[in-house]
Amino acid sequence: MTEPSGAARSQPYAASVALRWSDMDAYAHINNVQFLRLLEDARVIAFRDWFGQDRALLDEGVLVSRHEIEYRRPLGFRAAPVRIEMWVSRVGGAGFDVAYVVRDPEEVGDGLYAVAETELALYDFTSGRPRRMRPDERESLAAHLGGRAPLRRRR
Image (cartoon, rainbow, N blue to C red; front, side, top):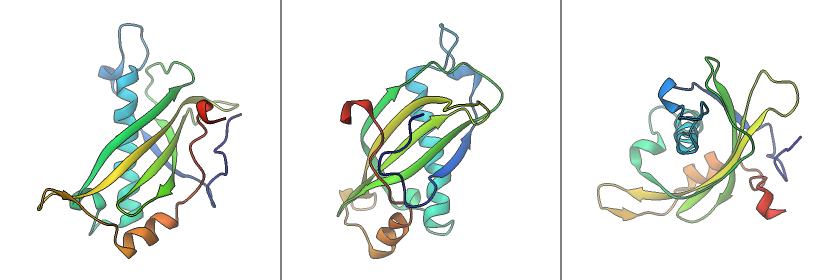
């Protein structure tokens, strides 16, 4: 079973994300590109909880600057959602990283489909420029801080 290295201080945040029929490719499994949409959907759910409904980070400006993903096994289409466990793996001055583990919540064993990490840059859409992280944002992220994503390449 693969667990987050230096696991999050508490349990990772978990979001249930539904699959779409159109996510499936000609090989009858979820297309690799669609995994990035699953991660995005999980981030949107998490950020509303992490940063609050009234001042969601998504409304102020955050851009994806890098993705790294390892596919551990094919994910076939099914009606049940996947469980995406996530935590903050790095906090910087003008951005942060989010680590993910995509699992089957009903499978005995690890049920692991993918491990990923996304680098995010804070951005001010009004000025069209990157911006520094505010203390309240840093505090919100610190509550979800854990280790790096357990990517095989890093072992």
